[in-house]
Length: 118
Image (cartoon, helix red, strand yellow):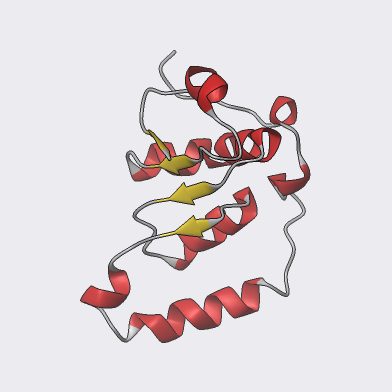
């Protein structure tokens, strides 16, 4: 996995990706949510896995699913064991609702990427 975080763009890592090298999305929550669709599109184009770190809410779980993430991690269920039921029920419910703006079917050129450094 190649770790990406605030300040990196798909162009910075594109040449290093492929079926044997995936993307680990770290960085700040705001940056992660703003750029997740672009990382998902890049992972699909390069045929690699997309992992997102520090995913501790239903909002972030759903954002990762919409971006086509292969896996996620987070510590919320360890710190707050009762949250597993809320998160699990939310994930199950979201499987029955498809977003009108689902980027999983988009190519990288169709996804806006704005790092916010302009």
